[in-house]
Structure formats: structure tokens, C-alpha cells
Length: 338
Image (cartoon, rainbow, N blue to C red):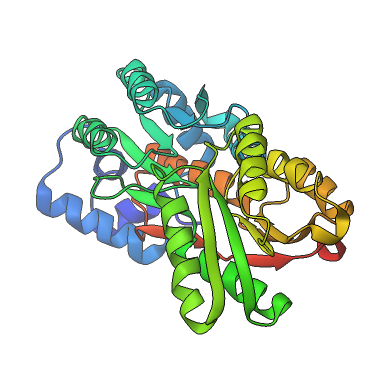
């Protein structure tokens, strides 16, 4: 194990100088500090976990998590991953504070971000794609807050990195799956969460892009449900009543259970072939009932765990993310391989 004492001996300085150079505890000649850091990197030096934990507890690192998780079961697994990661860092005094909200109310999200100021060192957020949200993120970054977007990203902001799925590819994959199941011909009804969410729009764009290879496909209508089950039921029912020729349904975000309840009101032989995203319990129930044929899975627990890990590495170890986007692969899952 490489120690500060060993680095000090090789650099010809005191252990205290090494400690100050590596941990920013006092003034060290810039040339000497650079030499010490280079030596530490070459030797693969890792701080003693107990020492790191003690230093971190003194700083009381706090991560704020802002998710549209109220009424959206998908985020249960994201939060589970976050909780598991946070518990492993308890020795470092890491605190995670959740700021839940329902749906995609821009003013509400801005209000919660304002509440966090002065209370958190890092923010993990599933943002609404709006210029005001991007500006608020930029202000937090400029104030020294480390920002990770999770599940959904946002255009033109200074966020440090994104953790989530490739939404465009998710839409392409969904269309390719329907193409394979229906033999290249379908009239498709699409239920999306919100056009204010970048990922939902990209998933739709990916679906439409892949449709260029399926000349027998047409989109009958696209409705938004705000990821709300009641709204999803009501609007899907109207969609099916107005377009009785729909042969396929693509449920590209939340509100799957509500949409499926509307589909179940049709005679069995008239029900469209339906695919959705995410293996939340209510969607699995609909798969068992034969309403949902397949889902696309985007590793929500892993997304949550990775977002916390990245924030922890920055707050405790001072490590910036090594890339801007951490992408989870979209996977096709049937009831048999859930």
C-alpha cells in the first residue's frame, strides 16, 4: 500500500507537505505540489478510507435529489438504487435529501431548486426541458454545486454529466419490435408523458425515424398523460373510441396501468398489440393479463446507484466524471425473462 510517508521520501519533502498538497490544507509551492501529485498518481496512491471518512464527515456532504417521483412507480427503483449507494457511504457522513414532485410543473421544479440553495453540495435532478430550468441549473453550477441529471437530460445547461438511457434508441427499438411482431403493417396509437420532457420527445423521434423502414406503419394519434394514471386512462379511452382501427399501442413513458385499463375495456379480439417501458409491478401485472406484450427495460436501479456514486466521488474524492454521458442499454424483455 502506497502511503504519504513513502511519497514524501521519494519527493524529498515532509509528510505534512504531502498531506497539504494532496488535500489542499495550506499553501504549498506550486511546483512542489505538482511533483507530489504526479508521484501520487504514478504510484496509484489512494487515501486511507478512515482518513477520508473523517475528512468527509467534517465537511458534511449533502446531495439533493429532485425527481418527479410522486405517482410515478418507475422512480421507486431509481430511489432504491440511490438508497443502496447512499447507505454504503454512511461512514463518510453523506446525507441524501429527497425533494419529490408530481408531474412536470416548471414553477414547482424551480421552487424546489430555490429551496436547495445553501443546503446541498450536489444536485441530482430529472429536469423538465425548459430554458428556465437550464438557467437555474447553470446558476447552481456557477455557485459551486455539482449537478448530475438522471433519467432525463436537458438541453444547453452546464450540468456536469447525465446518467440514463438512450431515448432515441429506445424509440427505434420499440418500432423495430412492433415491426417484427406485426409484420410491417400497423396503425399505431402513442401515449407519451409530456413534450416538456426531453427523453419522451427523443423516444418519439426515434420511433418515427425507424418508421421510415416500415412503410406499412402509420401513427394515428399521439396523446400526453403527464405520467398520471387517471389522465392516462381517460385520454387512452378517448383515443381508442375515436380510432377503432388502431392495431398497436406504444406506451412510451409512465401511466401504463391507466392506459392498459382502457385497453382492457375493448373486446379481447379487438385489443391492439401493446408494448411499454419499464417493469414496474403494475406493468408486470398487465403483462400477466396479456395486455402488454413486451417492455423495454432501462436499468432504473443502476441509474440511481450510479448517479449517487458519481456525486460521492466528486464531493469526497474530488473526482470529476470521466465522461459527459453514462448511458444504460435498452433491453427487450418479455414476461418470461423479467
